[in-house]
Image (cartoon, rainbow, N blue to C red):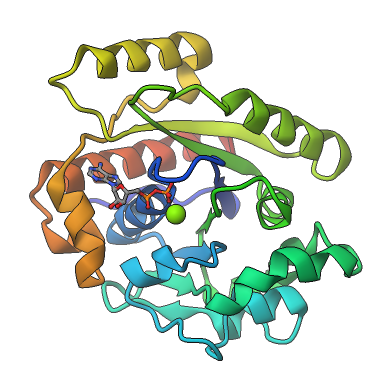
Length: 271
Ligand code: ADP
Ligand code: MG
């Protein structure tokens, strides 16, 4: 595999959409795997108490494992909570344990409650890990965990499922992003929209694709992720689809999407 350009500066992308089941976790782990395959050291931060990204990367996330929860509390360094995946030495994960389920409420009374993750993402920890890319996999809500992800990132990546009601709720997400921009993180921008679970047999999927493209223009990646059984089977084996079935359409499209993300980042410095 040819190498992709390293970004001029470390890129932190928050993968957010308050709707569940749109492909946040799938996109976070498979884009990360795609970049890792191309030699770019990439960290996935699992910020969903469900721990789906940790499962997909087969990283220990039993209660008590050093995780993003302890990192948010400042009890462990993010570097110490990060585990290397079996799949690639370039692919790392800070897991989420069930302890994170309480964090949404515990954070409320904490100092700098919106910036706990940003504070954990120290240059020291990230230099130690040597990562070029960080994907933060958000829970399906716009609560404090997602706000923490938005404060810690430069970029938001929004996966949109090519389905009925695809755009429903997007206004709310965008206005939350604006609020964070205005009050907490002026650098934040929606850099990337990824269309997921595209089913070429339906007219609807094309309509949604066109609608999203006309609305958001170049922010939408050219690559569209097809609906594919292989993509949905892979996490059951603790693998990304790139490891589970590298030749599948799902794997190829995530690899293409990862390349687009990297090439855009190289052009723009950061998006
Ligand atoms: P979210 O993190 O937004 O809740 P997931 O990434 O967990 O969404 O995806 C929801 C479900 O859809 C999961 O069971 C996942 O395996 C499946 N899925 C995601 N992308 C695809 C795809 N391209 N083709 C088929 N199934 C998919
Ligand atoms: Mg998820």
